[in-house]
Length: 300
Ligand code: NAP
Image 1 (spheres, rainbow, N blue to C red):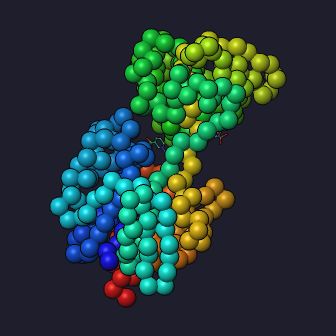
Image 2 (image 1 turned 90 degrees about the vertical axis):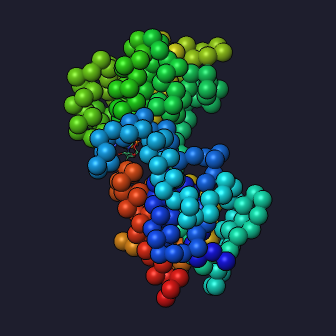
Image 3 (image 1 turned 180 degrees about the vertical axis):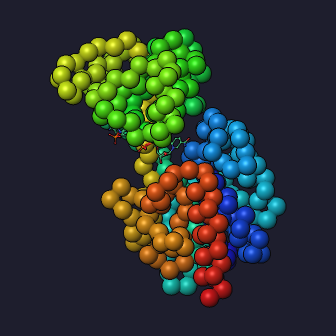
């Protein structure tokens, strides 16, 4: 019987592990290698205090190294969670584990746009991860869909590599941080405002898109070798449904200030929760608080 089982080895889960370990708790953390933390694909983290620049991969490796002596880390995929009054039962594809408390830090996955051709050309010009795939589009013509931090950062990165970059946003105002807005207005990126991509064309690979301007109602064909869809994320909270954990309308787990869910002994941390900011620093903070709350729960 573990004191705490943590599902997810991103910044939230790893920090929870670090803090639990410091309370001499018996901790198991599941690191699902099929669905690695989004941090591992972040090109450059520049808002983590004390570190001016670091790649997400390097930061994650440092966090893992810091906990590897004190925590039991397993590369298993969790398939079921059963909550009982006395314990939490966690089933993976290969085994069954028990714990007195549980911290969910499963994070989120990229949201799909449901555009005609999106599935057909996935990996053939369509990508959900600019940071991972941008180098494949050196000197090519690309478009980025979205208006948040991911899309703007992606477009800025692509502008250093690709021949041309168009950012396509459905409104006339970006959702991204103001500093990114300033950068992109100066940069070599065309912005197509009030526009939606209706179709992705191609034969074996993407060759272009059809874009509709929502104001003029005009549809234009644009040549493109790559389509980067950066329109946000969906939380990985499906697994918790049978436990009765409450989520908001978008599926983010509802937690209080101490990272408690509505179920005793089950805590959640990081991007899977309804936190207002999805950043490494806030995920770490959530993880530390969740571990402290789990410690208090186990020793109540
Ligand atoms: P986001 O903030 O939710 O923005 C999604 C963008 O995509 C919005 O502009 C949205 O348009 C648009 N969109 C959503 N569904 C769409 C659809 N079906 N078709 C076309 N456009 C659609 O997502 P995000 O940019 O991925 O960021 C997610 C979180 O991660 C945010 O909290 C962000 O701050 C954080 N993040 C931070 C950094 C960083 O370096 N600081 C980098 C990346 C992400 P509307 O604006 O019209 O809703």
